[in-house]
Image (cartoon, rainbow, N blue to C red; front, side, top):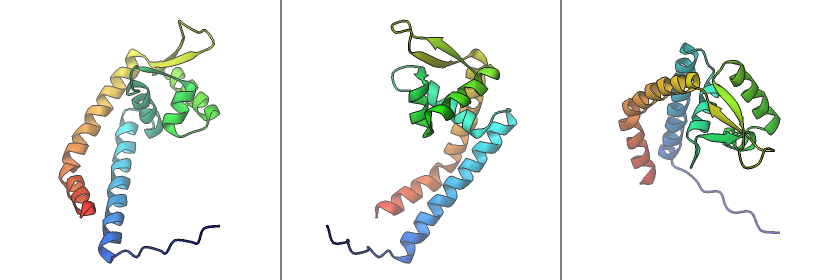
Length: 141
């Protein structure tokens, strides 16, 4: 059994930086929730649309891949997809190569909602860029 590592002691400034970062993240997430609500979706639904459209190499995902990207259980991802299908934001598509696999892709309505939210989020990130850059620079020191 290994001996426990000695605790690294942080300076007050280190804690301040970490707290400031967490505060900035929480503010951004709160912004994201409000922006999504204004378009009639939840923050999780927006994140799901983004995870599907932004998946590396393709614009559709399996439910398992979606569960991984959303950090949720498979059965929770199934329920999330069901709700998005009912809202006409996504559709299920059988795989051409293997009928046992089903992909989830955005509908035209889902694409429009995602594009509007992505535009709003990008503008907010640009607004926050100086603050984020200052934090990253300070944490590297």
